[in-house]
Length: 549
Image 1 (cartoon, helix red, strand yellow):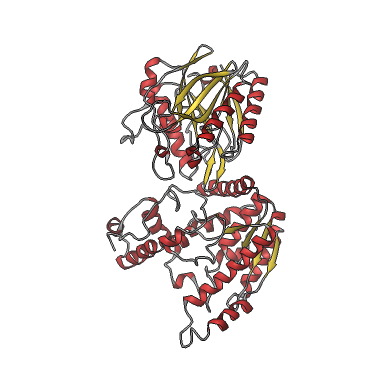
Image 2 (cartoon, rainbow, N blue to C red):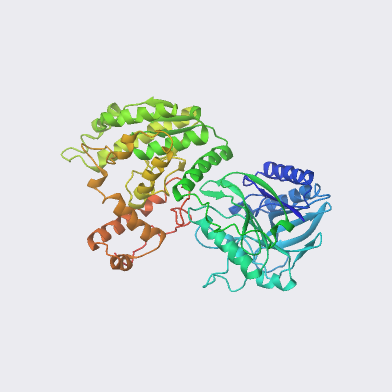
């Protein structure tokens, strides 16, 4: 049987685009003589649709659009994903499902059994888990069809009490097909390939796995669909971070295949993957929200330089506006570094000094603040002045403002609400400062795009004379390692102390992290690239009393 794997970029709720794209690929597959074309999880509506699922009209629309696709399935079959009604008057109203379309109609329905409800996932909020399993039969082949998480239960300490494939294997299938919406983080491709390999080795079956690609606000999907032999050999690994279409005959997935070695041999570095993910995240955010142009503040520092370079790569230099807003505390080299960057990128720029504006604030507040020393208040006024100017550019010219704060700053609250924390999308909010340096060097791997001085000079907010980040924070190598253990690996103070961290430093940093929770609730959506990003995947109370402080 010849199977087409359609790894596509969907737009949540955009039925016109999603369905026409699906029909186009059904027709392409038909022209190439395919017997079956496989699409991703919830392909008709896009994943994750979230509270769109609470509208009956949305669910009915998914079904009617599936019938349109079925009308093109003559001489070929298709597997598509969509939410469907639970017709039983018990349990949740919906199932996460797949339709098997052939001969112009819906031939069968497969429902998802294992519903992820952790980190960024919240499927049990909407869906009922399936408990009945059956094999698909088509063209003389028995197909064990599952949906994403249904294969993710082979750990030594499984999350779920049942495993769909344990039921399906009883009917002696010839092949496994899994349709997925598996989001990116820089560790996940490795985990995913190992998980798929464990399944084929356990059940002694070849596997077709189709993932979606593209970004939906903070979630980025990397693709990487695969065909794998029953012996765990990687017959085909499809493209990452872009659409792809591949044909394979099931006869080419048998044991006679030569061993292709370690399935992780060709894996790109974490930073290379993060680079591609962030570019895709920016590109899709703009395309799917109907905007073309970005604006950002450019300080001459490394964070804004990296965001500017990523934005130019994603949107084109003609669609990026960098705004330099020097103050009396800005060094001459910062302005020069910023200008070198815009010249290297050939993007548009404006220089809007903030001295007169901040002096106006000082004058208005002089009587109220009489006798009080310069402190963080005046520093924040500078940051908020810049935020006002950037939002003015956004409003006047229809630009989308990109936020340039990094994860280290976001973690400890080293930023100003309604100032440098404002924006529509946070590009680096899940990238630690040490990773930002790596990202800058990766961007410069072929030529110097980001000025070397922006990379090597000591980081500074430049809000007071001779200010350096090191005045307020420990060295970023130390800070980021500690933050990673606490945020990604969820280690508390006792575990961290046992690792050798200084107790005074530890208590100080953990207090900063916890105290900054109210700020993080007001940050823009953060492009997720790590296993534990701020946002919907990390839900901490704002006014909670932390047991260890």
